[in-house]
Image (cartoon, rainbow, N blue to C red; front, side):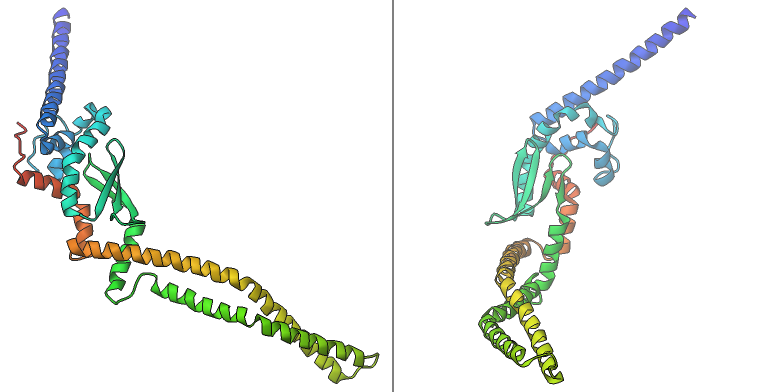
Length: 291
């Protein structure tokens, strides 16, 4: 019994020592890769399973599938460190994207360097991934398609609002005429009251009803005329917003066309960022044996 217990303790001790040595080796290799700024090796060590699945299916998982758990408390520092070379690469591939590090290792992505540029998403340097605003990109794609026909994304809506303002302005201009017509109808109404009596004729009754209806219609038109200036102002504000969006989209379209032949090519390149970037590191010869 004593021998069995001793053998069990030795076995447990050997396993524990082996595991600790493996962890120690992992930390040492990661530190060496950081010291040499060997980004490819760093990515291999941080995400070996993903590297095997997307880059090299023969890659050795000697440190297990998820060794990043050992250094996850250094996530921000690792992301900040790896962003140096990654952003240099991204500037070449996506020259219209600009990056702002809002917290250590966390980046916001902006489209363009012009006034009123749009925030388009975020960059995860550790996982080499964009998280892009799909709603904004959907507008860009639509604007690109419409641009081929010589239109803008908001041109139809702007034309509709402009046409409404023309009609509203007519209502405002006609307000003086409405007031004059209202005075004339009220004068006629008063005259009919003088002619009326206990036994007023059907003709007078019909004329009185007609005047009443016309006055009601004028009151409704006057109410619309009173609201028209505010509606015109609101429409003008909306036209300005839509025009500014069209201007921003035109800058984005021009920038995109300089680097990509189509929107789909741009999206495919952005969506396969991890594979493309690590493949570029391989092409640069940043390959280190993983034993």
